[in-house]
Amino acid sequence: MMMKSLFAFMAFTVLFTASAAFAGPHGQEKPDRTGILIASFGTSMPEARKAIDNLVDSAKKSFPDAEVRLAFTSNIIRRKIAREQNIEVPTPVEALAKMNDEGFTHVYVMPTHIIPGEEYDEMRNVVDAFASLKGKYGFKKIELGAPYLHGVPDCDRMARILMDRFAPYLKQRGTAIVLMGHGTPHHIANAMYSQLQLSLDRAAHGKFFLGTVEAAPTIEDVIRELKRNPSIKKLVISPLMIVAGDHANNDLAGADDDESWLNLLKKAGYKNIETYLVGLGEDPQMANVFVDRIREMMR
Image 1 (cartoon, rainbow, N blue to C red):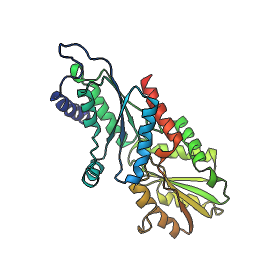
Image 2: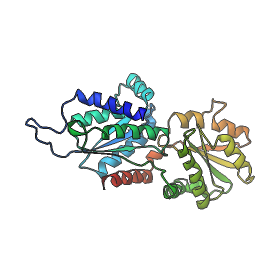
Image 3: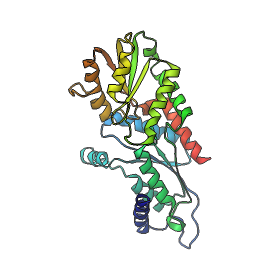
Image 4: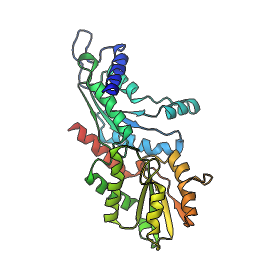
């Protein structure tokens, strides 16, 4: 409750200094204006940004009558790209306050999160805070979209997408795909990774091995499961993340990092390892799911 109240106070403070969003010069209500705010953790790697841009572009093409905007949730990344690339990206609070000031009445906030973990909870706090503002300082409607994995059907759908994504490798005998998720420690939503593993096992038993960089299953858990199948000779390692950014290039595939998954798997005896460093956000099917989530909010 304290965190929610704090966000409400912050949002009200920002909006209090802005002009009334709904009232015209004679107190007349402004016409409805729809906006979509895409909230991403962000990335400071220009080459990885195309995964986010693909989701933004897909939303723009699918909803031509709505204005699509982007916000980054990571202050570290925002400050870094502002310093190094001279690019200013707002926080979700800043973006929503500006949209309110500019007269948007219906706003749909769509996060790029894989699971509804801690980062998603923070977005929920922000949206709830703005939803609590009534009258001229509030939106007529503001909604938060569901993440990619929000239930068993979502995991089954993700498994099908991954099957298509790695289809050429699945045809190779003795080849397995190792996926690195982010993970969210001490949060019930982390269980979605285990559910996804079950879905992958049903679709292609013994071909996918899923771990996380910050929670469970760990890379040690993945190695133990790999060892149960001595027929596996080749590994393809890839991020189960929207963006193939720092985690993908360093924690997963960092050749100079002794603790990277690449080197830990080599130490475990796997010498034939191929990297597939492409963010999920670049996948057309992932973009379709993203658009479906936005459409669900608008119903």
